[in-house]
Image (cartoon, rainbow, N blue to C red; front, side):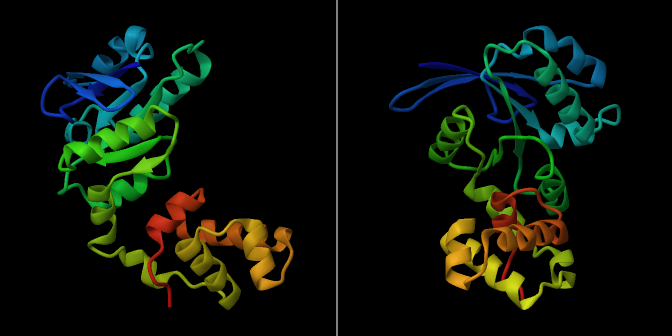
Length: 216
């Protein structure tokens, strides 16, 4: 099955075609210099299966706010009759600031990959992202893990919240499983999770697992 990938920036270094066992990914790249340039692309933009924004390129452009660009594209996708089910993802580099990646994880995207990822990992990312699965690649996880998020040391969890966090990080435990293990109700688990999400500034379990280190 052919998949169309449109990169605003230079995430793959060149236009190319990548294959896996079931799909062919046709990658097209284009540089932009302003928000107006971005708007001129929208007529055909959503005919692609995946749109990738080059985070470094956009942060370097004084006329573009990365978060505004993401919000703008997602808004258009939500209000348009998008038969192609286009998704939005982010491309970064190994020198991208950790804080920027943390900021981006709070937005409505389907994943983040690095141009420094191996071809195999990039292929995995494309497969996941075009299948509507949230995915963050190995190189991006390295950026998140190092340097350690300075804000994390100031996050204070209750003993019960620490137990729940550990079960999610080590087992990927569901609410039902956590409730059974800790002998509490699922509604109580949900209340604790909401509090944990708020303290870490994340929206879901995937983001929580990435942000949360060994909280003491």
